[in-house]
Length: 424
Image (cartoon, rainbow, N blue to C red; front, side):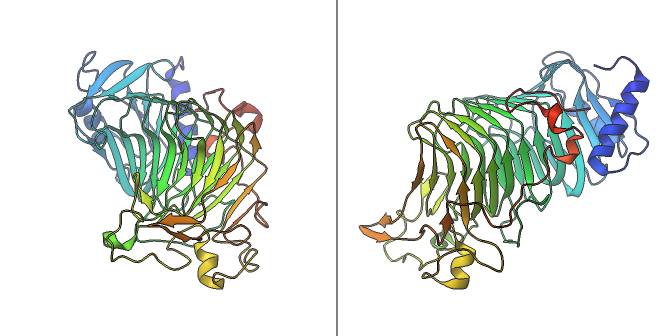
C-alpha cells in the first residue's frame, strides 16, 4: 500500500511506462463503493467511461458481485490500469453471480494495452461448464499480475484472437479452476513464427493448484509457459497443446501453433493418467522442466478438440488423411520433405517439429502414442527424428527472463512458486 498520493502517481506512471514504453500524464479514477456484496459492475463501467489514457482505475477494498458481463475497450482508452485498492491479492474481491452469462469482464480492442492487478476473482465451481468464466482478453495487449482466481467451472482467464507479442500473465495464483488459462489464436491464420522471441503470450512465475488444465491452447495459439509451479493437478494434461479438428466437421480447426514450455516445476496430483505436459499438434519446445512424482510428457498425433476424439468418431465414409495430417506434430517439415525424411530442416532449424530435452523426471517418462489405431488400422503419423526430436532445437535460445515488461531482475523474481508480488 502506498502512503501518499504523490507516491501513488509516480507508481502509476512507472507502471504505464512499463506497459507502453513511455509514461504520460496519468490520474487515478476511484470506482464508487456500492456496498459490501452488491453489484459493482455499473460503477466500474462509469469509472471506465471517465478515464483517460494512462489512468489507474482503483476498485475499493471489499467483496463485490458482478451480475453480468462488463465489456471494456482499451482502444478508446489505452494503457488503463485496473487495480484493487485492498491489501494483497484478495483485498478486493469480485465474485461472479452464478446466473451471469459468460465472462465477468471482457477486454476487447485492436491492440492497445490494459493492465490488471491486485484483484481476487471468484467463480462458482458447480456452475455451467460453458458459462463459468472469469476474464477475457480479446485481441488485446495486456499485463495481468498479482491477482488470484478461484472456483471457475470453465476458465479463469481466456485469451482469444491473440496475435504476436500480445500479453503477459505473471505472479498470479490459480486455485480450483477447470481451465486456469485458455489460449486461442486466430482460427484462419497459421503465421510463420520463430521461438525465443517476444511474439508470444507469456505465462511466467504463477502458482497453479487443483486445475484440470493450467494452460490449454488451440486454434493457432502462441504461448510461452515458463517458471510456473503446479501442484495437485485436477486431471491429466495440465499443460496442453490441443490438436486440430478434422474436416468432416466442416473445416479443419488449427492446433496450437507453437508453445515453449520450460523451467516449470510440476507435482502430480488428483488424476487418472500421468501425463502433465501433452503435445497433440503443432510445434513445441519442452525442456528444463522438473517433473515430481509419476509425471510424464506425452506426444500424440491427435484429432481431439474439447475432449472428443473426432478421428475415432468420424462417419464411416470419412477417410483418414495421409501423412502429414493437418497441423499434426511435424506438419511443416512433413509437407516440405514427405514421409521418408529424417532430421531437422536445415533452412529453418527444425520449423514444424517438436523438441524435448533436459527434463528432470522422478518416476515419469516421455510417452509417445504412435502408431495410432483407428477402427483396427494403425496410422504411424509421428516418428522420432522425423517429427519429434529428443535434442535441443538448433540455434534456439529462450527469450529474456524475467519478461522486460515486469521491470525486475531475475534475482528479484525469486524461485518458482514463491508467489512474490512483482507489480510496481
